Structures are given as C-alpha cells and as structure tokens.
Length: 214
Ligand code: HEM
Image (cartoon, rainbow, N blue to C red; front, side, top):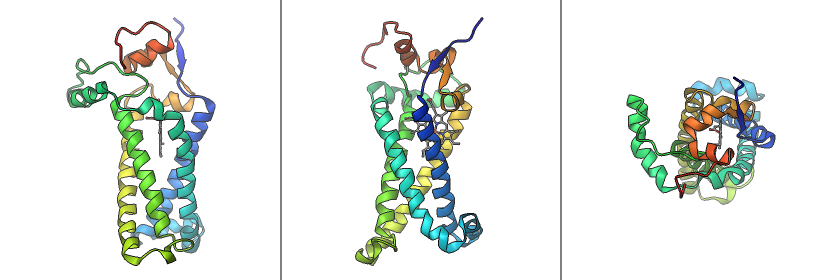
C-alpha cells in the first residue's frame, strides 16, 4: 500500500530552522570558548581569541533575529491550552511506563514542544538583553559595573538553560520516530500525524474533529 505524507513545514520554515541551528552552534561554541580557560582551544575555529570575541555577539544577534521569524511563524500554534496542562500531568506515565492511554489528543504541538518553544524564546530574549549590556565594543561603557556583572551571570545562566532545552529538543526529535523528516523533508507520514498529533491530522485531512476547543 502507498504511504501517505502530510506537509508539516514550508521550505522557508525549514531554511530558517536550519539557519538558526547553524548560527546557534556558532554562537554557542564561540561563547563556550570565552567561558572557561579549558575551552579556550575552541577559539582556533573562529580565527583566534580576538576574532572569537568580536564575532560572538554578531552570531548571537543573528540567532535572535532569525528566531524572531520562527517566533512569528509558530507562536500561534504554541499558545498554551487547558489540554496542555493535562498533557504535562500525564507525561510521566508516558515517559516512564510507555503508557499513552491518559494523553489528551494533541493539535500541531504537544505541551512538551510548546515548553521547548517558550523556553527558547525566553532564553534568547535574556541572552540578547544581557549580552548588549556588557558588549564592550558598543554599550558597556555606559552601563554601571554592578549591572554588567549581574548581566554576565544571567547571560551564562540563560545559555545553560538554552543548551539543555536544545538537547531535550534534539533528543525528542530523534526519540519520537518519524519526526525528523518534518524538518529535513517538510513532510511526515499520515501514520505519525494520526498517532502523535491527532487533532492536527484531522484538521489536515478535513474531517470534523469530535473534540472541540483544542
Ligand atoms: C541538530 C539540531 C536540531 C534538530 C535535529 C531539530 C529538529 C527539529 C524537528 C524535527 C522539528 C519538527 C518537530 C515537529 O514538527 O513536530 C523541529 C522544530 C523546531 N525546532 Fe528544531 N532541531 C534542532 C535544533 C534546534 C535549535 C538549536 C533550535 C533553536 C535555537 C530549534 C528550534 C525549533 C523550533 C522553534 C521548532 C518548531 C517547534 C515549535 O514551535 O514548538 N531547533 N526541530
């Protein structure tokens, strides 16, 4: 029997996603190079220590601006609903026992994906604002030293949370079989959609949903 595929992302959405991934990697590794002496060797990949310090903020601004496009494209489908709270409550049973029976039907994104989206949004916002505050080349001279110190701390904290979020995001994309083609090819199988995003699937195949309000 022929396998059916459903479009999940447009080419533009996928290009933006992968550009964010590349720039996020560059910002992340150049940031780590500046974070601890043990990671100083990473500076060689960015043209040496001076260049690493120069380019890191621009990579960061690049990630932020590109993510802004993703934010506008995806915010509507990532708004929190009542059923998402229900999903979070039932999630431990799914993760620990593989029991899917308590999970409410899901639209385009489940609550886990939504939490990733909002965590990334918040972390990038904190990274941008705090980064600007201690950017020596431009703004730092007009920012009081104690404010800069707090900004450095929050910058590192947001980078840490963002990295954990990215690891969780990548792990989930691999763990839930059939998810990766959504971002590599733009399509998912109808079986995947029906199993993991029932309400979105129904919407896509234009069948009346029997669960209102999702
Ligand atoms: C190698 C690394 C990565 C892989 C393999 C990956 C894979 C994926 C896949 C497969 C999806 C589609 C999921 C679905 O439609 O159900 C997705 C969506 C998404 N990814 Fe990634 N991703 C990676 C890194 C990143 C990074 C670093 C960011 C942000 C800085 C990011 C942000 C997003 C966002 C915002 C979405 C849309 C989902 C939503 O709005 O909740 N991804 N990714």
